[in-house]
Image (cartoon, rainbow, N blue to C red; front, side, top):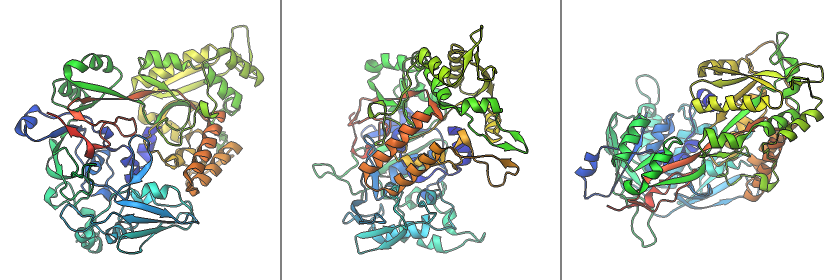
Amino acid sequence: MIEQLLRRWKSLTAIALATLLVGLLGSCSPRSLRTEAARVPDLIVATPSDPSTFNPPLNDSLFSTYVFALTNIGLVETNGLTGEIEPGLAESWEVSEDSKSITFKLRPNLKWSDGEPLTVDDVVFTFNDVYLNEAIPTGTRNVLETGDGSYPTVTKVDARRVKFTVTQPYAPLLRNSGVALLPQHILEAAVKDKGEDGNLKFLSTWGTDTDPAELVVNGPYQVASYEPSQRLIFRPNPYYWKKDEAGETLPRIQRIIMQIVESDVNQMIRFRSGELDTLEVKPEAFPLLKQEEARGKFTVYNGGPQAGSRLMTFNLNKASQDGEPFVDPAKSRWFNNQQFRQAVAHAINRQQMQDNLFRGIGAIQDSPLGVQSPYYAGPEDGVPSYDYDLDQAKALLKQAGFTYNSKHELLDDQGKRVEFSLLVKSEEKVRVDMAAQIAQDLAKVGMKANLEVISFNTVLQKLDRQEWDAYVGGFGGGNPEPHSGFNIWSSNGFLHQFNQQPPPDVEGVIGWAASDWELQIDDLFAQGVSELDEAKRKEIYAEFQKIAMEQLPFIYLVKPLQLEAVRNRVDGVQYSALGGALWNLDELTVID
């Protein structure tokens, strides 16, 4: 399902991408580069592809985000360990009593990388003239949209204060204020003037063919050079505002080389040969790299479970099109029975899945939110969980009216055998293996799950046409803001896959309806997005997680651990699955 998100949501927002941050910067670079600058403290990382732009609002590529994580910051930042919101270019902020406005106070004497002052006027320009400009196609505008479809009004209060006002309380506004700010003195004309094609010149400004010397930024680094398909080199921004406890200017690392290496295999080879400083470690590579830690002078960090999820879901859609139900009525009765779904959850041996398929390098998931999220609530918070228990599974099925025949085949209350298809994409081996184990596990409680292993594109077609019974898939993650999952959990969200509302342009569909518990979740998300008190928000989203795990539209499985190997020459690493190894890059030191 993460693939469906990527397919439908064409432009990932800057704030959602920012949570991926530098933790996804993989590794590598030729040894020769380090030799050329042996006296310069440098760090060599990798990206699997060239950036698509140097213009943050126009970014629709994960790989460009690696660049922006180094060169741009916003009014607020996200702590890579806790996920909490921290001051960025704004040193403080105040929320109004009615929760309809936030006033940010900028740090004094901020400057752009060209030495020009960074002011409140730049903030107003960035939001009003760029992100909220309908003539500029930017995904960032989506995350600034409030619950009623309106956008913030951004106004200057005085020389250091800027005010964001919304028509109704909108909690993500604070976190989403962390989008990259832009220099008005450089880009204002491009936003006003049009080119010969009739489009704003801004749309062709700061492309990857731009001389790096023309790029004006506010982050810890600026682009020094770019060789397409080869590498980007970054140098410190001499006007970066942050200093360490001793009053010394940050960042400490004087050069970053971002090598463009597409192949995971090549990254692995280069890391083991000593040419790379970091490497994302796959489960199959972990045993080898763990053995080589001392000799290779690196540390394999374990950040715990990856953000995102792996799951199984049933098609709960009761609608029909032109008289034909999307789901066989008998199957629909099974799938929509809460006790049936809970029985399936108890019948899946997730511990075996973790031990065998993930080689012990995985984590069982017991909540819609990742454990790294400050809003996470799990079994210790009263959220239901489902240990492997065949007796409990059979007891739940019996309570739901199911019986067994002499062959230990599960029958419903009308004598029909419980048999359904289990859809999974063929391109990912571990996912196919998970589906195969699920089929074996469910056979122990008399169910017959027929694996349907097909290409990803065909999977997407079946999901879109509602031609599926059950599915083994997954969602991505990384944004600690629960509302980032709104399109999954909203009953009319375009990723509400387990009970997908038909699109407005689809004709002949009748009988679609959201269940009471789906509407409860809708209400909780409406409350959560309008509540600015963090303690109250946590209570609201804890209730959401409780309902989700009671009703089990998604049966969560196992996901890999976030593992990354980092050279011991990199000092100050505070590793986490949320931020990775380099989330506090401006504070790190390289010891040669």
